[in-house]
View 1 (cartoon, rainbow, N blue to C red):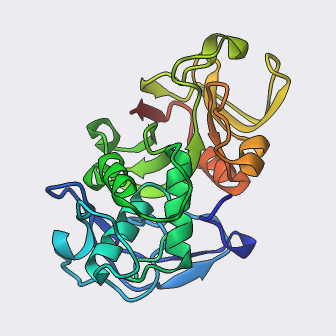
View 2 (view 1 turned 180 degrees about the vertical axis):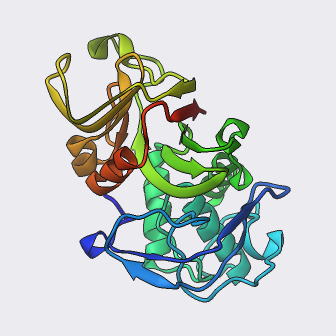
Length: 272
């Protein structure tokens, strides 16, 4: 399920990836070539996600790297339009190579995005999928509350991602799940993942839900009984169901990293 992983939890990371606010619904990136590999889950300043393949121009324009066309993107589309698709997929949490080629990995990432958005999983970036991605990606922008000084954990409920932001720079994006928006009586009072600004007030490395009888490794509470934690069920099943209200993470390694790098009273922003 986790397309963002590669064997051994290794990531290829590049430095100096910059997100700029652009007109239209795109993400303009100025990227560099990969500089290092690591098996350790470590933050790298300015990195939004793994960057592969030929670098984009040092001063890439919006049209070259970020704005999605109002049409389907296919293997026959221009390299610029395919790169825009890949760039926006990266912003919403997918491990996408920005190479201007509609390859198998791009198709898998389109399929994952469609799964997150409760769309038919075709792996084809038809017009409906492209327009939805354009809407959800919001031009690669963050909520203003996430741009403050220090560490902020930002959860975008429409993208189903958790971003670890430090001094306004995104250091990590983690696939996440949330509770049912309409609420679900069988899940109790915490079924809807509440929106707003909160702070981490409790941390349990080996957390356990007495309400649901469910293990919650690396639990960090931010509002009542709601918090972040790794979910083995989410890890195995993917987006076939919602959480019970918590922000669940599908990677044990990322959940541990988030736990280790988020001190008590860390600011949390949750929005749609």
